[in-house]
Structures are given as C-alpha cells and as structure tokens.
Length: 305
Image (spheres, rainbow, N blue to C red):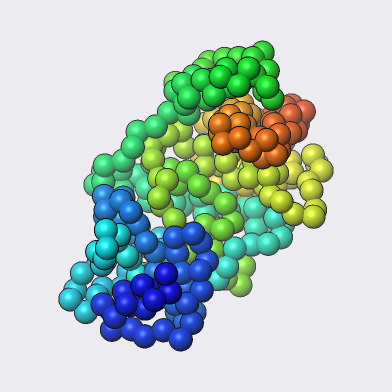
C-alpha cells in the first residue's frame, strides 16, 4: 500500500519521507497531510460537500488539497483518494476530565447547528434508532435466542423509546462522536473529522453515543457511577450553553443510551464477538442502575460557566 500511496501523491506533486497508517483507510503523510481512501464515490463526494459547507460556517474541518489538475480527489484502480491538510491537535486521553466533557458538549452543539445548513444542501440517509431497534436489532437478538439481552429487557427499553420518540427532534447528526473524531489542541477544539456515518436521526443520539462510549473505553481506569454522572452533567451543560434541549429530550437520555447499548450488543452478537457483546450489555446494566441519578442531575440546571 505504501508504494500505491507514493504513486497517488504524485497527482499532488508530493513526495513523502514518512507514511504512517493511522486508521484502516487513512495514512498520515510527513506529519502534514492525511490521505484517505474510499470505495464509494458518492460517499466521498458527499463528505466533500459537508466539509465545504462546514468550513463556510466557520466550523474547523480538514482543508481539502486540490490535485495539480485542480480536482478534489484522485480515482485510481477503482478506489478514490482524498488528501487533506492535517489538523492540529489530537484526541483527548483523559476521559474523566469534566472540563473536556463540557467542551465536547459545546462542540457537539456547534456541529449540530452547522449541520442544519448541510441538510438543506446535501442528501442524507434518513435513519431511525427506533426502526433499527424494532428491525435488525430485534432480529439479531431473537435469532440468537436472547442469549445476552433478555426479551423482557429489550421490550422494556424499546417500549420506553417508542413512547417518547415522536417528541425527540430529528436532524443531521455525526453518528460517530468520540474523542478520536473531535480533536483538541492546547485545551481547545481544533477540528472535526470523519463524517462517513453522518445521517438524519434524533439529535440526542450524538450526545448519548458519546457518553456511552466513555463507559466502553478500554482503559485501565473505569468510571464509578458518580464520576460518569458528573461527565454526563458536564456534556449536557456544554451543549445547552449553545443550544437548549427540550425537557422531553433530557428525560429520554437514559432510555436512548440503553437502546444504543442494546444495539451494540446485537451488533456484536451478529459478529460472533461475545466479549464486546457482553461488554455492551454491562454498559447497558450500568446505565440502568444510574437512570434516576442521571435524570435528577440534569434536571437541576447548570451554571453558566
């Protein structure tokens, strides 16, 4: 692959001394650029449009580098290559930091506000967490005889979600919010990356996905319930410093988080990955045990800074 990338870089008139793979489909070039390969041309062109619109909205995203021929990307051997300037900063490693949790809440809210403009100009997959739960998630769990999540646990969580779903605002969301996709430099947000999974869905999905992801981080330091709930409160406070959430949304946060973890349990069961399926189930149970505390904390209101 290194030889192929070196050939691809010639379209930009670049030669590289160091090529470092940073994701399965992305490589860092000389600490200055990132080249990403796509199999789907439509997805690539959609992501380019998203980046351009977000940039116009003063949202920090990676700058696309045009080829010497003035094109946004290179088609080569049935793949598509996009070169961008490397954003400053890195992902946060201290996942328990409440200050950074609040900044993540602010960052999600700012991105959501800008995404509203993207929705008007770009076509997106219109997805529904509720339909997923009642569709492939249920099918996966049933096909495997409810081996980790019981039918009763599944039914209770989905019934709770269905009762509030129509009241939850929908819009374009990132769909893969974690510290790896939101970069920080010297304590401040420096850029957003990876819009491959962006879709229309309930907007609190991004908040809930991030918060459940903190519990799923495979680090030596696990969260106590008190530590995690402080981070929950900090993220919501950060979000609401930019955009208000409705009372229905705040009340639904534990329910949405539980459904996300059931979704992941079903996904890993389907992948025959029992370790991660059980890990997701443990996060589900952790959230269940915190339901009342979460609602109590986020209903108290937040300081302005």
